[in-house]
Length: 212
Image 1 (cartoon, helix red, strand yellow):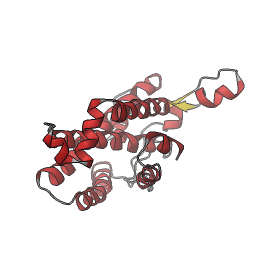
Image 2: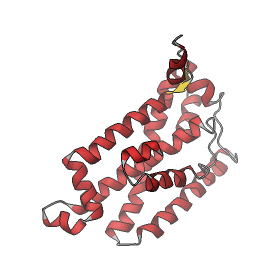
Image 3: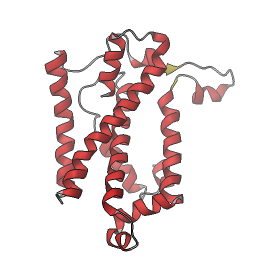
């Protein structure tokens, strides 16, 4: 979705000077589409009581196939390329500080790097330091106990899955923009499973995941 957004915006006449705005719009669209796609998993696992592992695997296989189908049928390509240039030219921030090692943090960087770091910190605080986070984790780990104290388990599970889908969509497009130079071919080369492994070895804790 993010790659399609960039494709259409460039064809609509977005100039090079609006590259960062285009990147932000593409990330937002990718997150929204990811959230909407995750509702299929929510509906099957929560409403229909289907096995979430099987449902998730099926949707995980469907997503790249659907992406390739759209690219082939509507754009007659095997991989969707940016009409003009690539993300390195359009999205990288050049901001030399002249202070040596600081250039490693501020020069030749993508704005998505700072956004995702901020999101990681904000969501870590939200999940582990707020009542909402406690309720959300309770609905996943001990739904009967959460229900007994008046928490709407169905609502919280839908919300958790939707947030997860949004982050998945955002992460998928950031991979396309930063690793694939803007070329979308329906796969992220196993990075999603790598992220899952880091989460498991990090023991589902923010610090462990950050160090992973």
